[in-house]
View: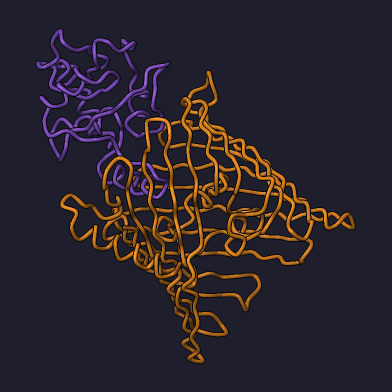
Amino acid sequence: MKTIILFFIFVSTVFGAQYSIIISKKAAVSALSADQIRDIYLQKRHSVGDQKIIPLNLVGQDPSRIAFENAVIGMGRDRLNAYWVKQHFQGNSPPITQPSHESIKAFVQNVEGSIGYVPSSMADASVKVIYEF
Amino acid sequence: MYLRLLSLFSLLLLSIGHADDYELGHGVHVNDYLNVGGYFSSEFESNSQSDTFTLDDVAVMAYGDINPMFSYLAEFEAVGFYHRNLTDGTEDGSQKFHAERFYGDLWMSDDFNIRFGKMITPIGYWNMEPINVLRDTTSSPLYSMLLFPKFLTGIDINGYVPKTEGMRYHLFGQNNRDLDEEYINIPNTHFFGFSLEKELSMEWNTGGSVGEYITKTNQRTRFIEANLKYDDTQWQIMTEALIAKSDYNDIQDDYALAGYAQAMYRYTPEHALIGRYEYYNDHHTEYKDNIAILGYSYRPLYPISIKGEYQWHSQHDENRALFSLSVLF
């Protein structure tokens, strides 16, 4: 696990951030820490200040999702699966999923407080970047 | 009641069969208002008196978000659904379903959430994950079953402690009888407590609780509990201790002290070896035991748990072997 995380940190450092976490321009949030993003995606926290946050995941096993889970959430697929099985018993569901990066971006543009990861090349002036990895 | 719940269970199985994106252990997501799930466990026990087979838990649950601020959870369970003594051939069981959990959550902010109804008492590690399939051994430490009420029918105000990093609190209280008194380990009329838990890092967390309850037989008990856990992808080490002081109808005070330390080594995501030492000493009943447990856990998929363990007790006639199969839908 540490090797994978170090690998992503190395790649990000040498080649620049591959992915950006974006939020609507209207949202009163300008940056989030990795810990805050992790807590939001694990549904432990649901807001930042007064801003309610809706996390979005990409469906399936896309490389960006795997990179996000390893580099930001800090949990591999097995551990995350165990976590969500336990959360199912507690009555908590994982973040909603979107079929593509384009739909994540469109969702973020239209729903205030939603956040999601897209390739950094897609993060234009229509959205706000709050974290890069 | 029984037929209705059996119908619900059938509906759950039918839903699972027809859900395209169903993943075992994650429930069926019907819509934002309704997710359904369920679980069962079966156990085989061999001790010095008998060998027994029990279909122990059969449960259905539903939960969902009514709106961004209000959510609910309902769970009904039949305990000891079917029991067969393999030594003398007798059979019994109860197919009566009980309200295990039935509550609503009113989310005001991450720092202030109100849960009301019947819920699991927010104390310690084992009580929060009480079902067989989520545990790493078939048995639970005695402290989690004998020294405080497992359920609360009342109110729990909870959330993150403001201005702290990863520290959560629960302030809970009950001033009435349980919603389903047939289905609680300690029937009580008053129960109040406070819990704190702190996430120290991805791997470490710690916490503690204090509380007081009055049983239906007017026994007042006060307790204090502390816990510590380390958990990475391979190792999990956890320990808890609880001391309780009971006032038996103003005649006599007595103490009970219990605790355990457990280590688990996952040598693959599916296979794990578990060792636990437990201490239990109730001065009032003069029941004292030291228990060593060696267990093995196999999860072909995480929501399918196959476990075996052997328990050595200082009360020698209580040595036993336990095996179980449990599944979460």
